Length: 386
Image (tube, rainbow, N blue to C red; front, side, top):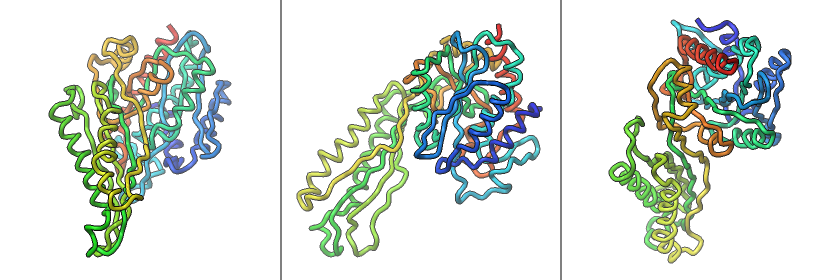
């Protein structure tokens, strides 16, 4: 059974509606109050305009380099989902703990906070840093200023554990992601005059066809890695909206799309190939009929992939702490690659719960997974105390 303090923290954390569109400051304040009562130094990295903040706390000495335990505080919306229990109230049923974020990823945060008394009792020789971010679900936004602060303030770490749900398997790699919103501007009018006009929906569809073709080509010819559940680079068109009526040529369309790439494939080159197709192949015909027509591209989210060596010191340590010899790579993205890219901290992903439960109605984490994560963190504590 999970520690009582872990369960109490999970109940409290789920109770904060930290959907990415909302502030997370009430959650951060609750964590700060807990840490302050235990005389643990912590620092906020605030985004005052958004009413949000990240938090970095250090248990043990500031030096030498230690271990970072990291996770995000935001969750995805529950809008339109059919929950059988209140999503922002932790509900226990048959060994499962239900609530938005219980799996992704407040379960890991709760374990970290629940283990704080064990960390303090251990007389650590190396520090354990708790790094809690915001807005991971909308593009890994909050961790970037947090990492810039950590670098500027001289935080050092020999490794980082990002506690995204992995069923406590050690994850050494994930794909990079770029997502884009494309607005297509055409020239509207009566559909009987369609050949003289520029149909924004049709040109959006032509670009979508190219995006799909790139994904099909990468599935056939791109790099492959059997450790990934989806072993190749992928493209995806998520939404395409435009038009008002059948007899009106649409003058505007909006499309959201993405590329998720293996580290061996050049994601920037793939993005540029798609954008160049719009600029060089599609726009000239559009502008010949309507000079104002064309494509506008706006990046919505981007994060680097993760590729930590299976025999890297942090990987070897994490396997020992998890009590297993295997490792995996995953298709979903995390903040882990940013810890490597921005702070040069070797990083793996390992956390309680299954990614299959993330973002779902009746999201849950098995209590046994929290117990396994507590055992993992206790091994981290022992390492930093040895």
